[in-house]
Image 1: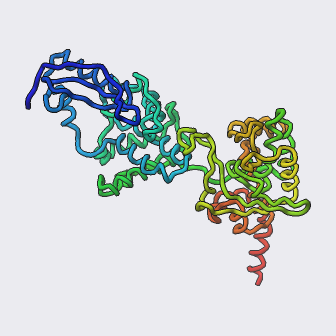
Image 2 (image 1 turned 45 degrees about the vertical axis):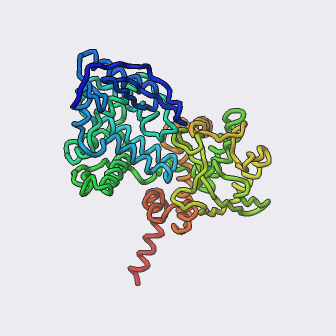
Length: 457
């Protein structure tokens, strides 16, 4: 190895030949010019700062690579194969195109717990909140969507890239338990909800399955860990389900919240109760999807949903964007007969507010889509108006989504076959019966009579 103490540095410069913004760190070792390109100026400046520090300490520099011997030794000591951070980045990018915005967000949310946990104990560790900030705004996004880093964030990212453990280390049960402990806590250090833990564990397991596919592991190491996830509540709480009279009172109260927002949202909430629409399905409902006769039952044919997500995860960069119906193939539709009461509400809504330029029934006064926080605010105000203080303090219709639960429960208790209810609600029959088992009330006597009839034969 040829080394030299003759080292000179130049200022970082913008790379004029690159279409995307990039910056060159430039220096010279033993008379030979060296350069390295970085995505941001902050990263390039930090790299040059490390080189200057090594030169100041009197280190020899390798003439071939241009690196001081300490950095060269650290580079050569790295194990083969990707680090956990590198594999996480490739995993998320491999799923980006085929995933919905909410799925991308869910995947990344799991990594915000896992990546800070699976690091080596190197000095000058940034706080977990700083690491999560860099991951959220930069490292876990495609290159074209990454925010520019501040100097402090650039330092945080460089530390993380150095400290992230090799994927090969995840064969150790100790590290896997550290990862599972991390997903079992909130970012504030409290016990995480059961559903959150189970979702994050599922994402982690799927990531390791991809590592198996890429021959990094012979089998999924997580399968060998004896760890029981917390039990999640999957059944609807009957205490949240309103009866028809309570539902009508709540819907009337919605129209009294505010000058514009409440009246515009009444029909959307009515769709959730009378047609069991999910909020994102109601948000994308268009006039062309509705058959609204002057008398009798009507029909809704759902084509799309319009879920809300953070802008960084959507394809359009907007908080709402259309996508296929939940658990349905692209362009697959769902037909829902609607009672005259909902037909009347929708006809009145169209007469009063018209439609958006794209035909959507429900929009803000400026043509946008109501946010989930707007739904929640209006609903909580309506509960105060429609319910008694005791009811308002109870779980009764605590969320707008409970209107959908009330609709499905009503259909089941009215004697509609589970197959038909599942078809209208967009569920599978087995999920329907499992989720709504506790809400099927008033049928015990009929069932007992049927059993008696058989026993008496």
